[in-house]
Image (cartoon, rainbow over all chains, first blue to last red; front, side, top):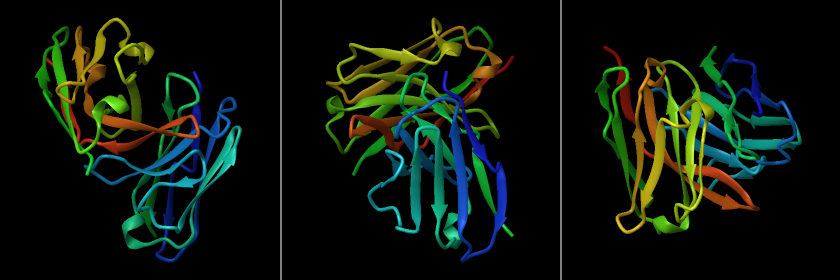
Length: 107
Length: 121
């Protein structure tokens, strides 16, 4: 199974900050990598697919990059509605696997 | 608008069974793979199973193989998860999700609100 490791597990930031979350795969997933945002009590929402493609309706302050084993999600200017938990997920091979999540909290 | 609504969750004793359903609307159901993902209380997301468009192929995480069965009824736009021999560690919110594809890649672009399964005596 491909293990996905996110860092950090949590971070504190302020509105307007640039935030970067990394996701590392235990083996290459090429670009079969998605990012999701989840708020408490809600279902996850797709942000990025194919490592760098922005899902329809997602603000352009969200950016995904990377390929192979190392990926990054960047929020260029954190907004109040962005405080949430973020997960990466590979769909290169089954079982599809998620990272453990990164919680973005208010500083 | 894509709409996915799960049902069938509840409290069940260890060793018991439960059948989850997901009613889909707002898209051509038979054109998409479908997925179940679960989330234990306070934990991360875990992919459970996929089913291809016409039920010809199914995939499961090892921990549920032989106990869970994913199925679909394209005529009724519904997805199901039959869960047998339930264990305490199966306690979670279960989400159904649509798997869209582009560039030969799959991603979960629409999710239901989830249904809670609690396995406890």
